[in-house]
Image (cartoon, rainbow over all chains, first blue to last red; front, top):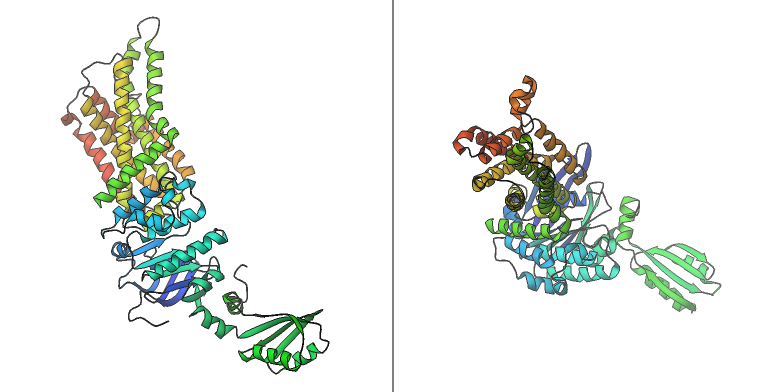
Length: 309
Length: 249
């Protein structure tokens, strides 16, 4: 990821408490222009609070935030002209029609809006134009909210827990739409508690837990840094196999369940070492696969618990 | 922002009409009750006694108007709290819409339906009641709108403070309906004990009843400047308060 000359969002030392509960504390990060940036963490980690401070909907107790060169709280109305927002758990009037919502939103911005009807078409809502909001499925509602977030042709789009509650198919369709937003040259700042979503969609992610940022980088580099372990799982009936695996220098652990071996080690050379060993001793294997750690594992490693706990 | 206000107002009118029960209940039910009440009271075997006739002449129209205004306010507070609970307000807030624009749209919708209900009342009154033809309909309509505006502003404060729709309706009703008792609509204020008279002077409903009764009876606006001033003061003060305490979520 190349660093751009001016960050789209810059957050420094932000703290926000609700009464005695500190929602976010000393949070700092930057979102670069043109990237999909993800704030990831479990529910209640402070993702939405952070995002809403950046959107200008909440005022941080401490710290500074700059969005597109503006102070989001003081210049909230100027900023709203230039950003698009999709909120977690938002709704529209039950009996508002899809096209009415799109046209209302288009009428709210000073800038000549992008064609609302074309937007609905691009988001696959053309045949739902006249449907009431309450009759839409979860995926259709989210697509409408994406359309509303894009109606003012924003430079920066905020997406909060975009695919929560959607089935896998709808989720994949939404991911494609988000990549489409980036392809139009816009910056996307999203939150998610789905590690798979972050891994597939985000150029960079910040991991947040208990209101603090733990680490920020590309998903790949986070995995390389925090989870260098590799695992090989194979099935063989060779009686000498276990002994041979244990003799390999980079192997850290071998566990066996009948003919099935799970071999753990670290570093990029570990896997080729196992393969070499198999070839050298002509070990016949019935199955062979490597397991690469994911963001999920990074999260587990950094926080000591799974994101779903 | 005017474009946004008009768009939103028009949309809210359409949305309101799409809920058949709500529209029926707010616009037609009061008229139906009004007509039935008149039929029961006015159709005795003999001519109605003088007190009933007097009530039909001036008390009933004022009472009916007060009830229209209150139902508009209760409906407004309910809608705002439903919008808040459902996250609709929050979503609107993340647009360049200002809070006052959102509230103004709802006020316009409520005033429009108040006018429609009032018009139906007057038509029904002409048809079913021994109503004189010399009632200053236009002035009375304006007086009703001023009254509605004034208590709508109190409705804002309630809508701003009460978080859930389930509470907004009873809280609104609890605040507004008892006010009628002290408003001089049923018993003249002068006949009340001093303490109650003092309370009555603090309640906006008292000025509303005085204004409506006077205008209906053919009085000049100049005779009710005090009522108008009180209602305007309430509207300005409550709007200012609600702008400060308004909650989006």
